[in-house]
Length: 448
Image (cartoon, rainbow, N blue to C red; front, side, top):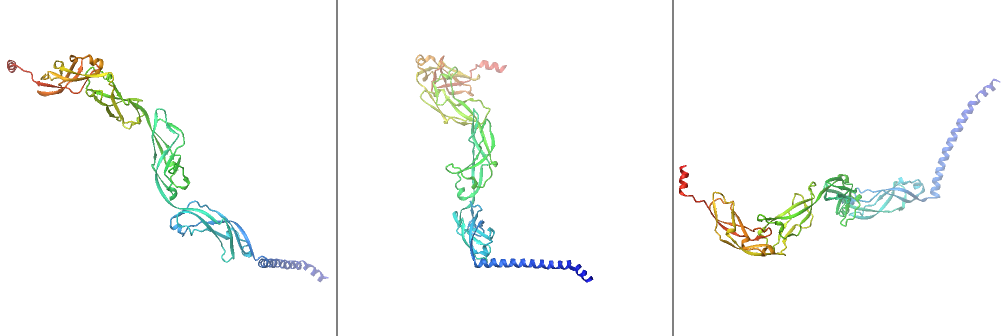
């Protein structure tokens, strides 16, 4: 009885040992089954499907110019962007069956790139596993178009472009300037050669009454035909680095006149039948506080040189520094209308010649008895009514310093006539001497 009980107690332990042995056997069987499956698949791959075709998408294309002739010649790819290709491969199923895009390498073939230009380049693909028997069947796309050029620099003047900026009424926009004046641009040589001008552009609208500066909003590149160029092809400073200055001038009218010299007292200069080819001109001035109108004297005309035939030409001078003549003409012709005017020749009696300004220490006498051939001009009705007795003259001796004989020019006029003048030069012979004193007067002076 005791033995039976002892065997009964040991039964659970035996079962545990048996379970452990059973599990170990099951695990081993599983490993063995896996190995058999792999071997079976391998055998099937070789015997049933020895080669396969497979398409792999998204294979990255590597673009590398290191060590190429293009790099040695200083060429750069202008428009290349990273791409991927789809590749169809062929090979043993057990070798390529698990291939992904990481198992292939795609590169751009640059061997034909030796100078500037546009190339259609092949895309080469290979397996990353040199021992695998992998054949490239097709590549989509199999070529890529790339432009090559040398990257150079060009320095060019920057001009201002502000179509909506103008001056207020009464002012004008004289000129614009850009600071800095030049720009250095980097880019492909062929593209740089197309640049004819560069503008610092301001698009905002504004009216100005004084000098002003604004920051450029955009740099615009133009060719010789004023077509805009693609700025993305160039490398340059940004528009914010450039300032556009607007120089404002004021509009002004100059009223032109000439000065008549040598006119006798009482002569009415306004009675002269004088005409100016331009009696006023428009100018612009940097002096913004100037009046809207000013007088400008062109020069002198001696009254004695006017015979109603001769015309006088004057260059228009600059009245104030910085002013700009906007009239389109730089000279004025002064002429005289002879209609209704005539001339006559008279003889001037010496009794009608007045010597003025003789220094008190001297006395003066006229040597001429008469001055013949005195030509006078004036309105016809006035000239025809005149006689020799109407002709008078004055001779100034205020500059006399010593005694002697002098030839002096006489200023001739028609007494009581404000619109008659003398043409030409009329000279009078004058003798200047000291006053005579008697001996008695001289002795008395010495005694005193």
